[in-house]
Image 1 (tube, one colour):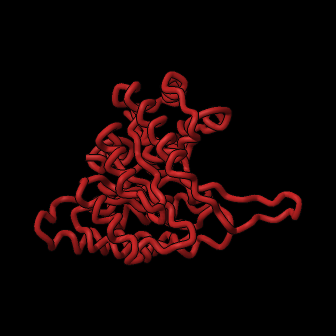
Image 2 (image 1 turned 180 degrees about the vertical axis):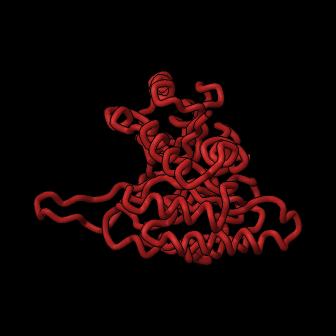
Image 3 (image 1 turned 90 degrees about the vertical axis):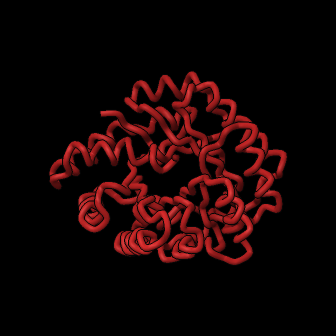
Length: 286
């Protein structure tokens, strides 16, 4: 069975040959590779605390990271699918999106709400631009392993605003853990309401099953997704890293085998598993 990983993070120094070697080792047909984070957290080691403030990278640094991933993806012959990790509070976000598509063929957008709510009206111009391009969005959803009290901004209910954009595909990552039921409820709401709109046969909301969920919750989370939403909107991912030592410490094939065993135990058919591990991501990217 072919496997696509929908959730791999760029560290900014990727080498396409090294990534492809790693993908072969981990039996990955394709990956979505997210461009390097646009902010830098501050850590005050002397005080032995985590400072809750973050510092945005400059436009020059942001574009450098965009170019780096774009060129890496171009050399991969379609196996590395680039998503632009944007920070909507940056002044030139829309220009960055346009450049990423025009010059480097980016296929999607990644957003992590880090200190702001994703549906704030001040960001509508960014979502309007994304809707105009037709690109899908991968949202971080659930507890945020970042600095400060940031998880509140990433609760699943905060993404209901996407009903304003019925033709924009989006995915809620990590099954919203620890708000698994809330994530599934929001996804179901978006799916069912979308069905009543023109073109309602096109799925809008997907659930990225990347952990998040510790193994203790894994069977419950996957079972809930299958029974409430069905396999058609679930996408496999691993939260791996795309370069350096952390890439080789990331073991997506182990996560694939674990999820496959759980899904088989839950009675998920081979056809539906193929959707989860492969086909759905192709539909999501479009």
